[in-house]
Length: 192
Image: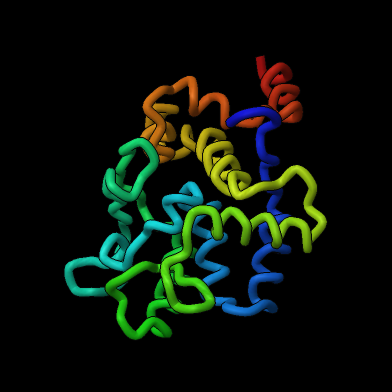
């Protein structure tokens, strides 16, 4: 992350994005793109490289786990990511409209694989349309890491688990993604 970090999305921001996706062209694909970013923490390049075999189980159905190989991930940071319920539903819905379910999950208007740059541009256009300043294609990923870090103790995990889900080689990188919360800090001090 160079310069100003991407804004972390509030729950209301995500609802606005999903509502806009439903009312635009290619609503099924657009919803999946948003959820791949916010609920799986994928980078734009990973969204563009994701193929159906990476999300399908042995029976050819959308599975519970996404297998992102090193070849599809940034800097070879392949990983296994559990598929969030909302993302799974959106993938199932998109799979019903995809006759092949073998190639890329995210296709362009011309039914070709989207490039990482086109994914970045798609998010940028959405944020401009919704007047969401400070947001970029990285906002969903930063939201994912921040939310995961805040909730990991409830799952019995550690920041190392968040690091692995994000595909970061260094815990310092993961820490740089996490947005602090002054409300949480005040509650923590009161609890001491």
